[in-house]
Image 1 (cartoon, rainbow, N blue to C red):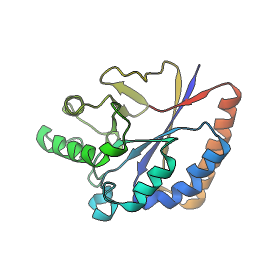
Image 2 (cartoon, rainbow, N blue to C red):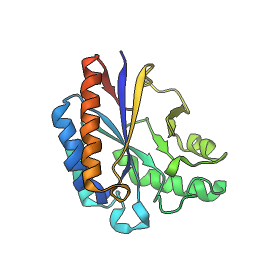
Image 3 (spheres, rainbow, N blue to C red):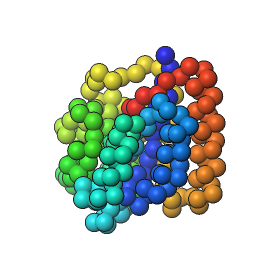
Image 4 (tube, rainbow, N blue to C red):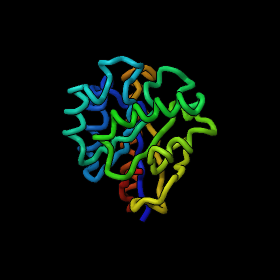
Length: 195
């Protein structure tokens, strides 16, 4: 079977309302839908966006955990060089973000996405030492260890839920096109899987 692997980037407490206007509608249309949500642990280094302490994020996750899989996207995404720093400072940021997201992540399958898909020679070894299973970079899934969830044949669909990149009308159009694309894949017999 071929699987649809949907990933959404840039999740943080500031975009929960936008999620309700887009992904929640998609879920109503596609009952088997699953999505891997790359979440920024402390978006823009603002304490109000700390997912570990943010009540709205906890409630958002609790209501959607049957179809949403939370994974880590950097730490704050405030600085472009977050995963291109020297080993020690990069490891400190990744570990700190991991600790904030750990309770939301699935057991034994931890996936990382570097901010802006930028990383250096240290990043993969740091991820392995922390226990990450895979890294998503550009359109590639880099497996760091074997998991019982590996899928052989899939179509990776990358999306972002970042309000700062587009206006709300643009986002509605993107999700309308995504909805149509998902229907066409379902008609071909594709199933849904998370990374």
